[in-house]
Length: 391
Image (cartoon, rainbow, N blue to C red; front, side, top):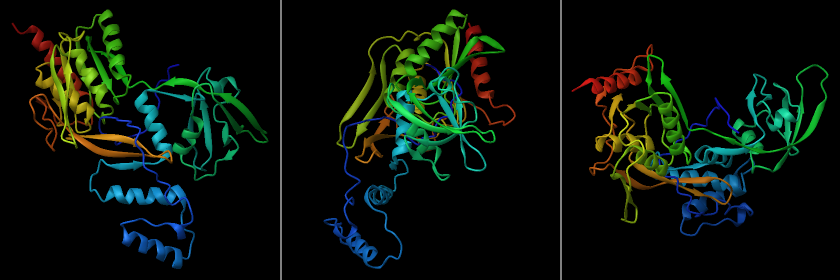
């Protein structure tokens, strides 16, 4: 089931999702604080003792304290891309990168009073259960939802494996409406990473925007190109503006659609090993005229794709300099449901260069104009058409 116009969780992912199955317990403090000791860290133990003996208020315990200390450990690295992600955000992040999720088929909005309203999708589980637009969500599986509950936490509670059941307490917004307890069965919903359209002034040019690089991205790009070619498109502008990255493999697979052979990117890991991502066979769109629109929000996996296409002389870049991020973050799941994003590698372009800190410079630079947000796309399309007319 496909859902359009879905709000997406902003993520500071970097590239290269590596679910290695490695975890270390954030719950070392699950027992009583007075029993907590960290071997080799006398200062931490000294602080723990002072907290135990002198702090006036309640001391967080279990996973909450472990996560707080974990954030401090990661923060001490001084790496802006290494971070801990709490369980609700990790659930949404995983949905975003896998391109689908199990849910009830409804958006959630919060009003000025802090109440949670449901907006069901047509013919989704919530709609079929009789939930009306604007109904208030009171509880999920018996867990009440106080005003301070974040939308991330609520969304994570509503999501789960497709086919699993979830119990909701809801009430209509009308005066005197009675609360209802409903049992819903979750279904699979898609989170498309790609949108596309034909340029109104040049319907022979398809614009393909990649919002985030997920496991589904390369397939979505290929289907968009096939559909557009059937409608007469003869050129493509990849719009990577504002794309924060995503999965390294998704960027590589997308590049393979447009390249004949050669290297896409190299990954230099912490253990000294180097992994090269090659093009094994000509891609189905290796001769399709191509340009790439970029800006300061084009980062990580998006920079890999843009850089590889340019260095393989497959496309030019139009717009503003990219973000400038040349490191890979692996994602390690932790025992409490959170995750650790840790910088584990650097990547280099086909010519061996790293991405400069000030980003990839466009071949066709363009000063941003707030009154003309799509100028870079049009500039790229015009240059493609001019190249067709050149002898």
